[in-house]
Image 1 (tube, rainbow, N blue to C red):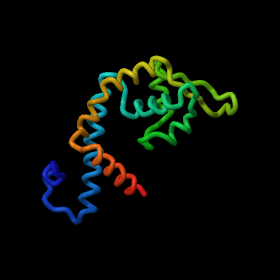
Image 2 (cartoon, rainbow, N blue to C red):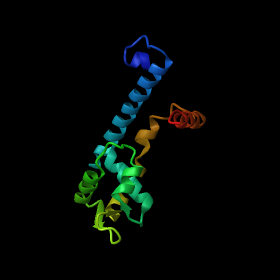
Image 3 (tube, rainbow, N blue to C red):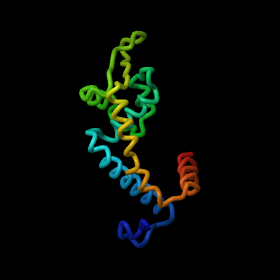
Image 4 (cartoon, rainbow, N blue to C red):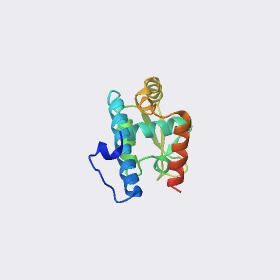
Length: 149
């Protein structure tokens, strides 16, 4: 549905204002769908993002600073998220041998198993994108990359 109809706003100052509103609205819309699909697993989208980063690092550990650098949501508290995942036994953390101030984080087998299960049912988010052809998805990716400069 066109953004103006979706938010019941007929006029926009210009196409750039409309674009900003459309990007924010669409981001929130996708985020809500994603959060809802993860609810069954008892994790938040931010926790899911950390687990995916750690799976990509596996079997090597990741420092909290590396996690912060690679997180999608830069406003999240990585240390707090790691602790919540540790309590769920999805990650383990240990003091870094080389730098006692740093903490190494590793995904556990339970965390890997959970991600594998989520991957099997990951169609929830991607099915919402099926309104776009693969070519349109590539084009949108290119435009979003260009937007960020």
